[in-house]
Amino acid sequence: MSASNIDIGKLNKRITFQTLSTESGDLGEKVKWKDYVTVWATVKPYKSSEYNFMGKLKPEVTHRFYVRYRDDITPDMRIVYHGQTFNIAGYPLDMDEAHRMLEIQAERVFEGVKYSG
Image (cartoon, rainbow, N blue to C red):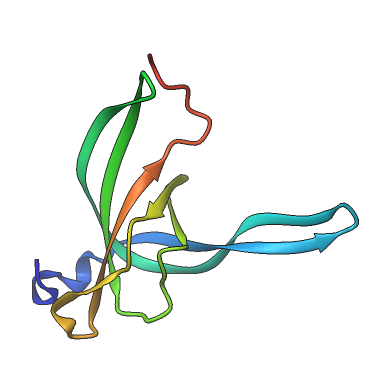
């Protein structure tokens, strides 16, 4: 898919990028996720599967997020969309190297989910 194939009008979903933040307090340092920026995006699920991890089935849902070009999004961030969390898988791709659109590949995080086994 090229940047010219992404219709700007389809950037109709709000996603929030988060960064890890370290705060010092009376009980030592505390690490937590903080909202960094909220932007308009196109969200496309492209893979849903389960794989065997240490004898248990673990769900894997992978998405692609398309946003207007920015140079401040890094793989150590995560995305929150509709209350779901996604880890960014690698560096965002500058589509067509045109500085117009980014493609961000991400995997859903299943926090607190008990995997079947």
